[in-house]
Amino acid sequence: MKIAFAGTHCTGKTTLLRAIIEKYSKNNSFSYITEVARGIIKKGYPLSAEANTDSYIHYINDQLEAERNIFDHKLFISDRTLLDPLAYALVNKELPRPYIRDYFIEMMKNVWLLEKERYDLYIYFPVEFSMSFDGIRPSDEEYRIKVDKMIYNLLNENSIRFETMSGDPDERMRKIIEIIDNGN
Image 1 (tube, helix red, strand yellow):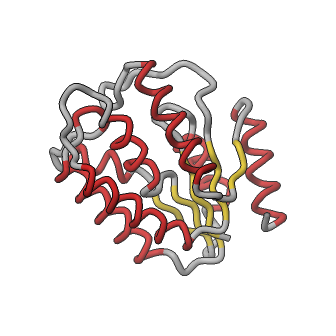
Image 2 (image 1 turned 135 degrees about the vertical axis):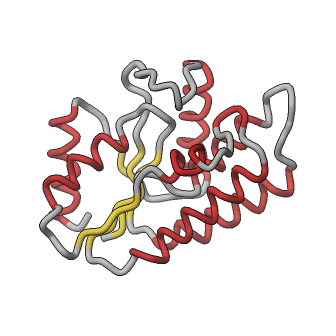
């Protein structure tokens, strides 16, 4: 089963993935991708509201390279996909300074629509709780909600099969185990 997590920042994607890693770490047929966005930031490319075309080029490249390198396992989970930077880019178009040209955003969408074929199921993480500030992720709640709505709309507009992941960490863990065990 190939599972894609999708959601704006601070919605619990990586936290849930870490719990899954702990549970399934001894399972040699489990692989995952995590922290691609943080890797882009560490390379010196801004993300979120300050993202530019180079940021997205690196994001797309690093995500696809990671998928290419570990996509052959029985269970695979990515805590983000190319849906996420697409949603951020679309929200950023509304900001006063358009860093990303429309043709580039259109290309991002087309690449994501190709990438989505690799996944059996998307897990959507809505905004449910307040953000924890770590100095890396943006702290603007209004921005986070706009990105959340954009991700949700893109999933629906493109008829993507997805489950909504909500509840406290224990509820989320029970739900994801059920999804994995049932091969949903």
